[in-house]
Length: 487
Image (cartoon, rainbow, N blue to C red; front, side):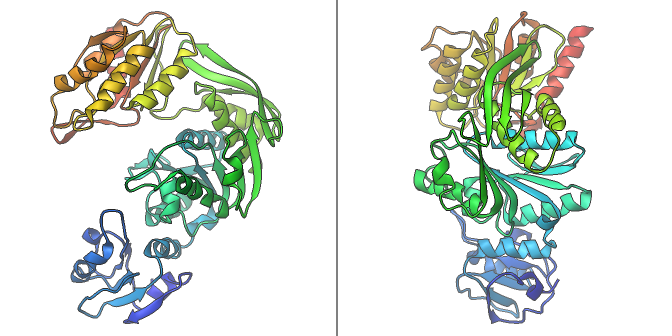
């Protein structure tokens, strides 16, 4: 594709060379530059792509996209733009043929609930026979393909490339987690989303490479509502009016607030062995009795967001109900079927705050015993281990302490640190250093009515030890153990 065509929607000045040059690909990592590529010099928190301009030219880059002056030899074309991150988004959209226009696009922002809401919408659309792709914490998912990503919201090139693949695969919709950093750094630019969703706002991502303060964090989330046609926001969140203050889109609201467009009433917890969830009555835009297969009162909010967007898309209520009743999120209070009268679930909780949230939620279901299996990551602050130990000791009836990505530390040293925290409580615990053995211990000793949570790994399918990642998927381990015990 000619550089001029790729730059069609980007304001630029030609510093030198020819914008009629043929471009084979757009690259922003100098290590991946190949002959004929356009190299976009991105400025990050730790590095500046302009420093690698010469390397890119040496590898055969046909063009450099810069915001600062660069001193390079050769016949390479140099194009100057105001912001290379913004330019990358618009260039990528043109390069991949503007795939967003071929899909119904849905973006979700908020401190919590993004991953779960994505899963709920995807499941509802599946029930309605609508193929969709997703981008977020769990990576890029297109059909059975699962592409791992480094960030919740990948760079814009990856986003537009993924949408092209989704459209070519036959997807009719794309659902993306739009993180505040993704919005701040133009990763979802060059897309006018059909729908934008705001879940909630709380303290997170402040300092370092993220946001300077809470105000910037809030304003970055609010940017989504200047990039979509319809904004669907949680009216119960105290920041909801600030989120849509400068919105350019039509807005709709959801919540328990009777003034919302979509209102939840009569919420209650649902519990039986192998199923934890919540039910409520949806009123207003959609009138229905809803069961959700994800535990906790907060699941009502995520479900309302999913109901709101799917109703706007014209999805029948029967598919909305079916989708929410059968939804599962990999690694997020994910229930794994077992033959006994107890409940076994996998959750990504890997720090004290996330453990507190999940264990407090599970306590509401009044289990016979709440058993928490967990470890802590090696080469990370020891205070996390103390805090996790104390949290589990306080909220669990039994803690099973084991390994979790010990990296370059000895597992037993990490376990000793966890015990420092747990010994501040009256909580009972056992130590089973090997994670597979620990899972087997939990299953063998399960009693009727127990809830067992395997915390820390969630969607991860590996165990990191001494610098090497070994395959380990807890779902596979559970299946193996159940098979062994059945013999």
